[in-house]
Image 1 (cartoon, one colour):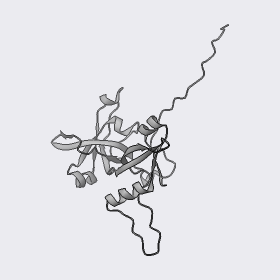
Image 2 (cartoon, helix red, strand yellow; image 1 turned 90 degrees about the vertical axis):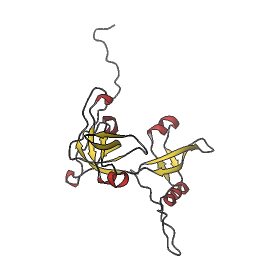
Image 3 (cartoon, one colour; image 1 turned 45 degrees about the vertical axis):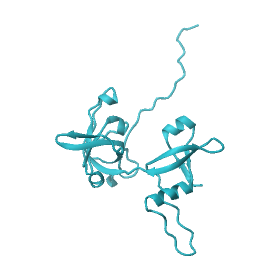
Image 4 (cartoon, rainbow, N blue to C red; image 1 turned 180 degrees about the vertical axis):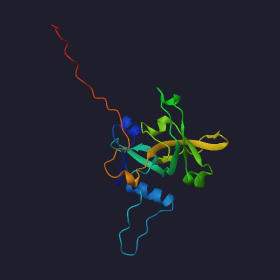
Length: 188
């Protein structure tokens, strides 16, 4: 065995996380040229796939009908700095987009900037200067903004800064719990 991949889409479809076999992770490591090296007489170290790594995969069902990952590929994660935060609007697709600059992205793709759509960062309240991680779609569209080529930043996540310290608030959410109906006053 090895572990599980948490995926909202597969959890919705199959009602559980997706099992990832050690052999699949070893094939990923070999494909990336990261095969673990062991010395004579030593047990080889486990392949490197860490929590928070982003992966693409296909699902096949086990003999028992459980989802298992196959053909796993790591999705490159880029680091960048928010130049302009995405705006707020009643609907995510109406919100003005923000921008992020990334030297990692420039080295990998030749494009230095990416736009941040509200839906790509959830409800995180980003501000100019925030450090984020994100990924981009393979062969995704390229836009030109103010004469600069940019791509869409996807799965944008805030990177904690050391000065934030432990226990500080990096984001917030709205939680709505179901409530029992209130009794009607004077009702009979």
